[in-house]
Length: 137
Image (cartoon, rainbow, N blue to C red; front, side, top):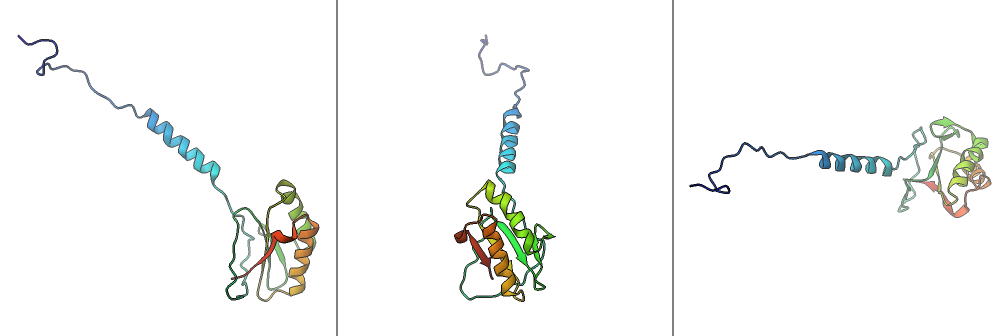
């Protein structure tokens, strides 16, 4: 009396959801976010920067950060490089990207002359004058 397609037909077929495409999509997103993440390399020392009023500190994520401490020591990447090491630190990065900005983080107690020497060495390393800035609060 009941036909093949009736509502009371009880079959033992189980319905399953295949999660493989969703897992593939999650892994693709994970790989995308890992590849597109930009890491900012810090200088490795804490610098007490002077306050110059309304000047905005526009730190770009892809920049060369050089710190001058209150004891006039120059740091890059957590290592003391001295004024003479600035050119060697800047040159390969500028060769890779000529428009990469150089940001000098000068401590409030750092000598102005040392900060200017770092500025000059960055120019000698190939950095463009308009791409070099001194970071403040």
